[in-house]
Image (cartoon, rainbow over all chains, first blue to last red; front, side):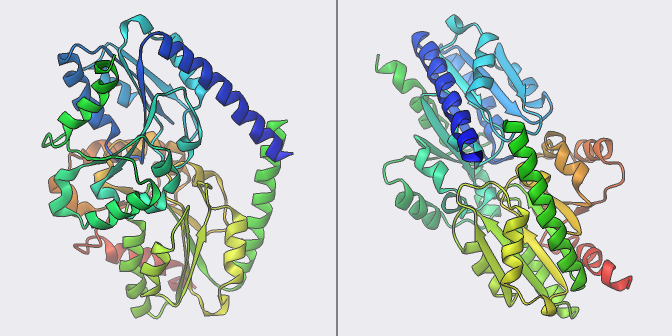
Length: 217
Length: 217
């Protein structure tokens, strides 16, 4: 019985995700689902990303998920007029239905790039389609060089992987060759970007990735 | 229907947890469930803890949960004769049944302190009783000062909170007063230990905490 219930939940999620995708794609919005551990630097990355995209005439919006607090939304509202915070209570991931509700609170005609900052969790968000164009997996130097190998489902599902907080490399043990080898074994075609909002490393390449779909039109 | 299924799952978990607790307590074992984000430093902390407890004539064992890989078990096997790695696949937390299976692979008569290193996740492990004596919540400096406020259920459920990687304080923005105030608001009685396996900060207090139940006997 439990299996049937879970199958039904996932089927309903996929149906709502398809509706989200149709809506977003119809509005010409490029949508990124950011998945990373708590403290991997997702919000700090968006704080650095939003003004750069604004400078490039891209209108951004953010849907951000957390169990509790409005803190991430408050941080990002300084850089972006359209931010929706979703508090999941005990829920460990965003589902398509959360995004569906979020979209109703956004002016889609005034958005070019939508970021969905998922609940800080390397596991549960991977299995839920939200209607995004791409899932981006966020690892960090301080999180350790074993995290790709320990989270193979995210590495496989990701269209791009980020390695943030490279400014901490001198202060944290981190075997870059091991980390890269684990990723290459799990997903030979995915790109890995090294990033640091504090030093600026990698931000140009990240912005280029976000602009590519629009540039191609 | 879904609610009934979830209630049944939790009821079964609690029954198995009670069996684990009776078994562990009958064998005079102090059991710690370590819950923290991926990369918060749980394994590094255990690598520093195990030899110190051995020196104090405590016989240790570890049950460690991860989606994939044997890496944590391999790291800890250098310091501890009894280590069981449990791979949960896509499972985002340990359940009482995992620990029940783990206990069958351990010689309980040769254990004083059992560590259960939960799957790296600040959310889902909180709700599952494993039969432990205490849940210990692990936060880190590099994880950011907002993580207690964002994970209130863990702060409330924890019998002790650890703040690891204090050696990174000079290199990471972290408002200690804010972090402490969030904890005090959510759980006024819980202690917070500042720790760094790299510098040794806080390790004596942590070892004292682990020895206290035995010292009291």
